[in-house]
Image (tube, rainbow, N blue to C red):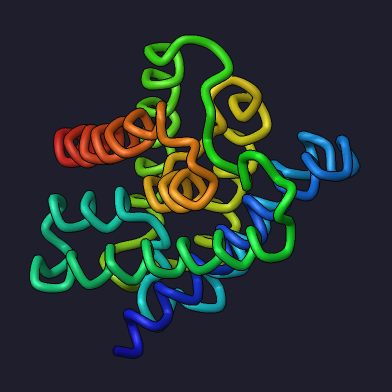
Length: 211
């Protein structure tokens, strides 16, 4: 339960702060700015890795959990419970944001600015790169080295910085599903439920080939 609680809290923090930044930027007409949103996502991911890494590995992302399972260094019996904890934390965060900002239209939901295929390919590649970094600095539920959180958080910040205006740079099904459900923006959510897991698994394939 300690691990599942850590995943719940960590994903709650990620969605509350990350999509919260998007929501506040929306309702304040740009006070946070795109750069501020990207920095918020990167910093909260880094902070939660350092805070929760020793307890659960701080996956905070169903795509990451599933990819670790495919890689063979995460037990299959825990995959469903991790994903349920992540989705639960994300959903509660979105509900709190809805309570705080009832006038928000999207609550930070991931929405493609262009075509669905454009965002699908972007999300696949973004998650591929993110997972490639993760699998090389962390293993299972243990981080390797003091700079694991900094490396992973920096990749999230970098990818959110340049790809956020196009696809939302989600890389995380939980981060996208929760605000979509609470705000009712479900039309394009399939992109963010399929592309990140596929990208993460592809990264594991390349990682295995390169050993």
